[in-house]
Length: 69
Image 1 (cartoon, rainbow, N blue to C red):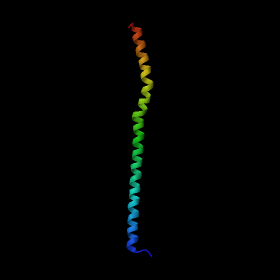
Image 2 (cartoon, rainbow, N blue to C red; image 1 turned 90 degrees about the vertical axis):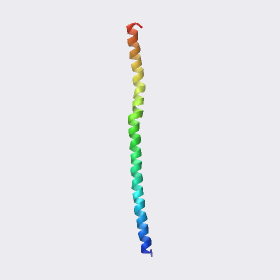
Image 3 (cartoon, one colour; image 1 turned 30 degrees about the vertical axis):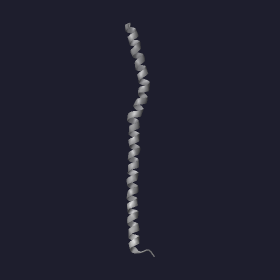
Image 4 (cartoon, rainbow, N blue to C red; image 1 turned 30 degrees about the horizontal axis):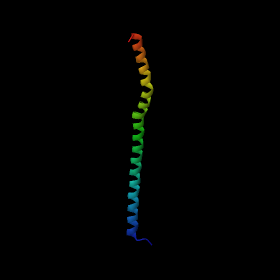
């Protein structure tokens, strides 16, 4: 049979492993949501600017041509 001290140590190690797993899962979720927020705040506006800037330049140059420059 298993020695009671050995069984207690195994239970302690199991509890610590469970805590480490929970901490790793929290860190994984935190990193995932950090990536999602970064994507939403940086990448999506950059893509939108790729469509807005040419339209703005077109409008600006047509205004300048209308003025007579």
